Image 1 (tube, rainbow, N blue to C red):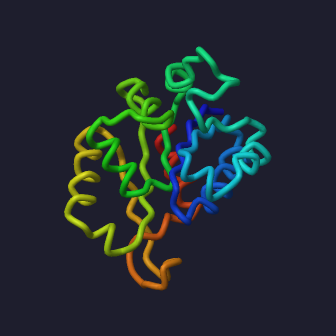
Image 2: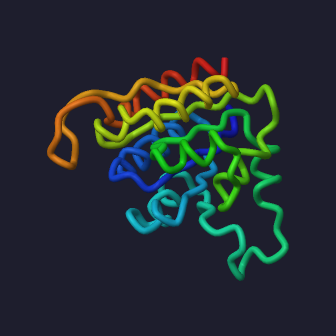
Length: 179
């Protein structure tokens, strides 16, 4: 079907991203996962490889990738650039155009017109912070679609908005964006 670049940042909800990657793959999509270092510290990259049959990308400059232009190659393949979960840190970097790791450099290299879907996931207080809201608004102005986070019990013990949308909801929206 389609080639999806799945960006995964270091939120406790990364476990849902594994399920999402699996569901996208089962739906017939080719899923290439790009993980931040923080995400890879929370969940083994091998888990994403197991559910997508594609080795995830974690480090732009690892010994095995010397000289590779992964950020350009991945961006050229993208029919959908999907970030789930998107932390407040990553939202800030993308809103400001900071490219200091593989995920952020891929983001800058994705062609104009390619659908970009962000799925924020963070503590309710963090999500409500004016800086985070400003960064999410900037992403929308820049052409991103930002899914509304779910509401409920959070890993930190608080209740409120900030939960990563359920994988089935993200899968449905991804399907709509891909036409």
